[in-house]
Length: 183
Image 1 (tube, rainbow, N blue to C red):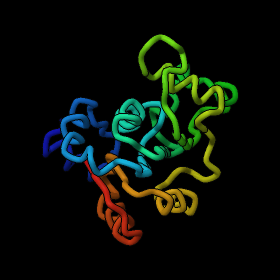
Image 2 (image 1 turned 135 degrees about the vertical axis):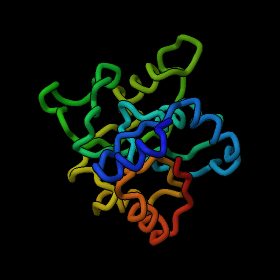
Image 3 (image 1 turned 180 degrees about the vertical axis):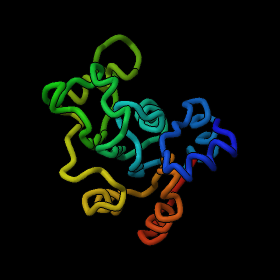
């Protein structure tokens, strides 16, 4: 967890890349489990290739009783697509650089037949088209028309938003009357 001085420095430098640990997400989400049943969860600042928020919700999709999970990321994410071998379902390596993506998950099950559900099953569900992974038309910014339409489709937003845009980010959530958990 970053210190106060690191956060202050990051705010001045507009450094927004603080990634939340999966264990921290798990600890916090245990208080909200019952609120996710039959809901559309939107992780609108979360690279589906890297985000622990995406990982938490996709691996707990059935247990939480989610209706749908949507994750989007910015085109300029410095780590976007660095684990793409797991989700190697779109284009060539050159076409994947600095592209914003949208992942939409409506089902999660043991696709590989190994007796458990893990990220390899999720990758296979994307490859088979049972869930969708597509490039966004815009840059993936939470304020873009495309991402605002996805926000309107959602019930609950859960993410670690861009630190330098925190006030604006929260204002957008209030404007669209969304329930949210920001860590």
